[in-house]
Image 1 (cartoon, rainbow, N blue to C red):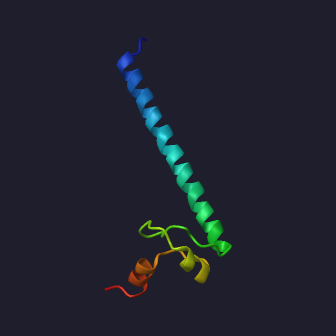
Image 2: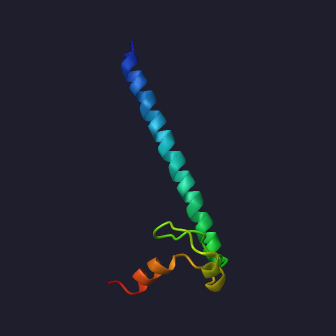
Image 3: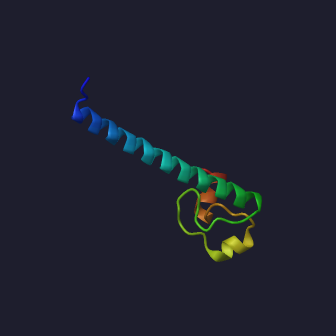
Amino acid sequence: MEHDPEILRGAGRVSDILDEAQEKTERERAASIGRATAALRGEAETHCVSCGDEIPAARRAAVAGVKRCVGCQEDLECPR
């Protein structure tokens, strides 16, 4: 039985896509575990988990384990 080369190339591309998806999932899982570990230790994030903006050092020093910038924390606590 002879295999169509085009089908084999397609299968290789699918395999590459699946490998990339698995690597992305593993990176995201590792980052999530890192954030959870930091939270358990009460460590502050350097960037807001909601918007991604940098959290000022003064806020990180003042609020143990801070995860959000002032604006996002206010939006969370007092939705408009």
